[in-house]
Length: 101
Image (tube, rainbow, N blue to C red; front, side, top):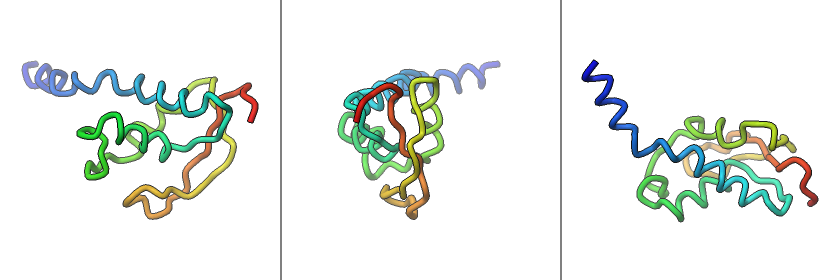
């Protein structure tokens, strides 16, 4: 049980990141523009340089799924990732539902 509690404590600083990431995505898509996980990642690197800076290797799939989850987003198509180390993998373009472009 102690090792389980230690693991939970180690992840405690990251518990607010999913909601912060979703809020950044909402800010970027507020004007109706299409955004991708790469766009969110660029903002994260500026706001949290130690946690999400260019030299920090964070797998895309760790946070990408929760970023655009829910009924407020709709998939608009695909693009190629330009993130360092992404090897131009295809990623989705998203837009907030009900926003004019």
